[in-house]
Image 1 (cartoon, rainbow, N blue to C red):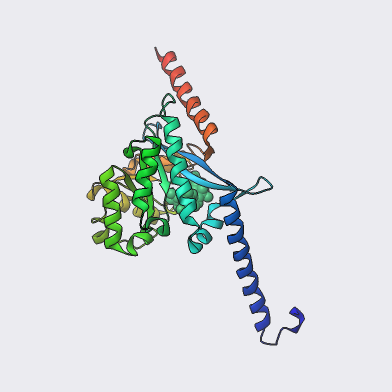
Image 2: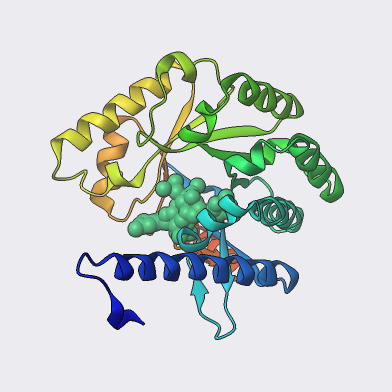
Amino acid sequence: QAKQTGRNGMRFFDQKMQDSISSRARLEEALRHAILEHQFELYYQVQVNGTGQPIGAEALIRWRLADRSFMAPDSFIPVAEETGLIVPIGQWVIDTACAQLRQWRNEPGMAHLVMAVNVSAAQFHQRDFCEQVRAALERHGIDPALLKLELTEGMLLENIEETINIMQQLRHLGVRFSLDDFGTGYSSLQYLKRLPLSQLKIDRSFVRDLASDSSDQAIVLTIIAISRSLGLDVIAEGVETAEQAALLEQSGCHRYQGYLYGRPLPADQFRLSLAKCAGVEERLAVQVQ
Ligand code: C2E
Ligand code: MG
Ligand code: MG
Ligand code: MG
């Protein structure tokens, strides 16, 4: 049939569109299956302060396929968002993150860790989102101050009044908010100052070439200045080198996340990696004495 393609190539175009639609439909079907079969896992990536001590973790979803490989979230979250499947998936993420916080409460050196959880627009704007979060915190007996929801600029501007309302309800419970991928969206300062945020997260696209790109340096300085003037803290994502960390530190950013400190890890490996760094510190302390 493809041979019948007209001179204008229309048939070929149609075929490609058809393929992309059916693969989307296949992906949607596979996602439904994944929800029923519990094929999702959460990985945790450490966040550290200026002295390299762990202060929190970001929960990052992984979809384990039948062949044991993973599908990256960037490949399925958009489809989950378009189909509304992000709602049950996101609910599972919040519940699982709270269950994990409950476990950390009993682990030496982990009870203070703040869990950052990514939230999609469709999930955030569900009628009972706030109630879901409250129920998950209560079910697992979690201090709401240990939960930080990561929102993106785009989703906040969709319906600013409703957004502020939902954020305020959650803020009232004690839950905090970080603005993810900051600098890649269009938020005006006018909007930003109305949102009950506690943190800006510098997008990793500004961190990557920080050592060589003077406009990235200027952008990072500006984001840090904005966070100061709004009374927010600031964290950088995608920190891979000591040089990037030093530049961020000099610029006034004292919280970091990135491969330099640790890759996203399954819960048990995450715990071991923290225990190892704590062990190193203890041994150093003993040597100093
Ligand atoms: P994000 O929230 O901006 O997460 C940071 C991404 O950067 C993660 O990719 C992380 O693995 C990666 N990363 C961390 N440190 C470094 C580094 O030093 N270098 C580089 N090159 N990358 C680094 P990941 O896990 O593939 O997630 C991609 C995106 O998928 C996330 O971006 C977030 O937008 C979305 N996502 C992940 N988990 C969830 C979830 O549970 N719910 C929702 N709604 N979205 C999620
Ligand atoms: Mg994030
Ligand atoms: Mg991010
Ligand atoms: Mg990002």
